[in-house]
Image (cartoon, rainbow over all chains, first blue to last red):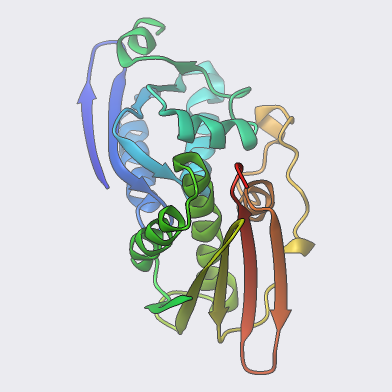
Length: 111
Length: 137
C-alpha cells in the first residue's frame, strides 16, 4: 500500500493505492493521526487506486471520522470508490455515515 | 484441491489473497464473487492471527481451496486457541456515528459474503470451512 498526501487550503487529500488490510491499516492510521496532530481535520480520502479494504481499514476510517467531527472541527469524506469497495461499505452500513463523492474535485469543493 | 501453508503474519494476507483469487477465478467465480471471497478470507485469516494465535509470528495457517461444480470451498486450519467469532455481538450497522463501535465488523462481513461458514475445533487444530456459490450455478 502507498499513501500520498497533498495539503490544500481547504483540506488535505490522502490518496491510498493498493491493499488496505490488517498489515497496512496501521500506516494509514498514523498518517491520519499526523494530519490531525497538525490541527487539520478536513480530509478527503481518494479511493480511485484502492484495490481492497478489510474491516481493519474500515476501523481506521470510522475512528478518524469520529475524531475529525469532534467539536465540529472537520470531517473525513471519501471520493472515487470502486464499485466492489462501495459494496463492502454498503454491507457495513458505512454509506449512511460517510459523505461519499464520485470524484476528488467534487469532494474538495464540498468543504 | 490446492493447499498452501502461510506464516501467521499480516504480511501473508496479500499472498493468501492472491492464492484464493486465482483458485476462485479458475473455479469460475465472477469478479465480484471473487472479491467477496477475498474479503471473507482476509477477515478469517486476520481473526486467526489476532485471536487464535494472539499475535503475529506464533504459528502457521494452512489454506485449502477446493473447486466445486457450484462454487468453491475454502478451508483454513490453524494450531492456536479455539476462537469462535459467532459469539461476537452483531454490529448495529444502522446506528448513528456516535454509537458505532469501531470493532466487530469482520465476522459480520464473512457471514454476509459467504454462503456457508462452519467452525470445527479439534484437540490439536481448528478448522474453518467456508463455501462461496457461483451465481450462475
